[in-house]
Image 1 (tube, chains in turn blue, green):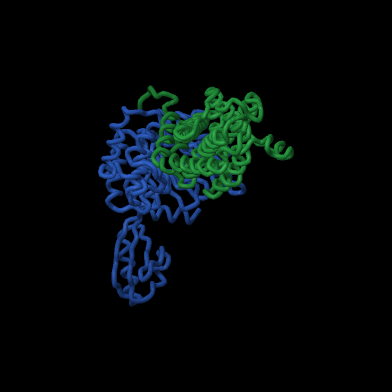
Image 2 (image 1 turned 45 degrees about the vertical axis):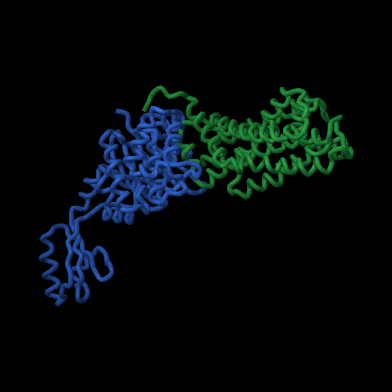
Length: 299
Length: 257
């Protein structure tokens, strides 16, 4: 089957800045994919290249088998992008804007049913006749998502869709996006909220300084850290014997890495022998953030 | 997704959106320029009517076509430039750039909207003016040709200016320091034969002069130069500016970079 996204040896230079350094990435149809990385890693540049908003210095990108430069019309029909910034057209209301947006893709009246479905699924029904300018930030964000979906693209890119968004919208939005994913749409997500990526995405790429430093299923990435973390609040300092386990200091707490649960016995024994008493103890599973911090910090 | 997508439906939608945009604010985009033109008309015709005859017609009949054309040109420029700079600065232009609309279609949609705004403003001024003034209309064909070419030329110029500009005040500078002087000093209010020889020659370098003179020729049947010369110069300017606009759009200069 044609991949939803294929990126081959893509380089992008901005003057002296080498923003993307030979990125290769293939995303299959129907995947829920996360593109993670610190600020300035090249995520947004990569999305701009896919969307045809910028041109790569070298390399090729395709969406649903259509080259984003050569077959740009088909490639753009196949792609819906939710931009990071809250941009809107102040002249129109939500429904008008969505119909225009679908119209730009060549879709006329017959698409209005879909537009109304998107409006309802994103909780915009009450605001359908409200001017974009008068919407609150959260509502603008919904309208922005709706705009990217107006032409029902098979591949949907969400660039930081939940930045500054309340819990209710997150839930509404993810329910709808997950439904689209079940119906066969490919979803690509960039986010700073790693727990979102962990819950939603089946595969993850981590980008750092223009290079992919990890590309694997979410499960495999988590398995790289099979251990657990022990968070302790102590009356006294951490005994020397436990220093090798120290992961980080979090305020009054120390966080230790455990390769297995039975290590807790050893830790408690060492603390007792050193005469340090416990005020609090928490056992925490490794999450994507650990993988992220480890990879981004290490490479 | 429907496979039977008409290749020009996207451009048609963009054109409709552009029309609705200026229509939504028609008080500012149509009524205001009409009001300004009528004030000019009132003041100048009151001061000069009966004292001056130009090309064998009354001063008012001479001035009205110039005023119509000046407003038409300024509004064609204002339409494409303000729409594009606004969506650039606001960032919502991205929603057009993400679509399969080609650069040629993008150009034509913005150009057609600019022409239509120019024609609407010009027509309203004309209709109001003929209520009060006896205005000849000798060659309607010339009127239409120059109205279309002139608003097209300024519409294209507006696209170029707003591609280049990054802020609203840069567009305002274009309007106040380029469009206004060129249109004021092009023979809207006077025949260039009334100028000293040097300034007549300078005026001949101003493309606005040919647009206004050719347009006025359609009304009063005479002008400072032959309408064919004006047609040649205005058409050539229109094609050069359109070609330049298309090149900028194709390269993605400041829009896709």
